[in-house]
Amino acid sequence: MTDRIEAAIKNYRNHYNCSQSILCAWADKLNMNETSIYRLSEGFGAGMGMHETCGAITAILAILSYHCSDGDLGNGKTKAQTYHLMQETAERFKNKYSSITCRELLELRKRQEAQTGVKTCEAVIRSASTLLEEILREKNLL
Image 1 (spheres, rainbow, N blue to C red):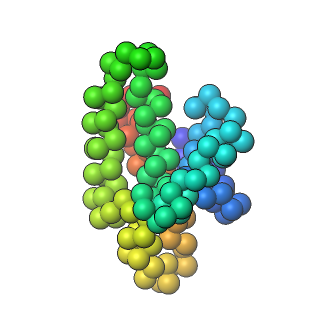
Image 2: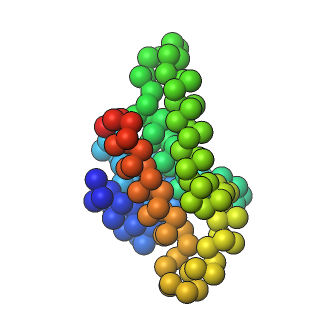
């Protein structure tokens, strides 16, 4: 699956936002075309356009939700399980970065960017994509 991580990085380098980068790399596994996902997730970049919740974490939560849900319309049998997975994933992300907020992530990573030359969002996209793959394997969601 690491090809998807590289695809997400390539998307970012091609001017997709953080959320679009990850979600578009997973388009085929979401049974959607890339254009639709690109359009749907445009507003999730830059912390939902307000530097609030990071677009990368938003993307991986969307993918995990898709794979966790049973899709049984109106029944909601998997909601509690899905919500628990969202909380667990956000905590794991916070353990790495101490935040899921775009503005805070940018501040925290600014120094590292100066030292490594790796753009902040690119590093977060790589890390979030790696976390996504780990959780999908752990939970047998693919």
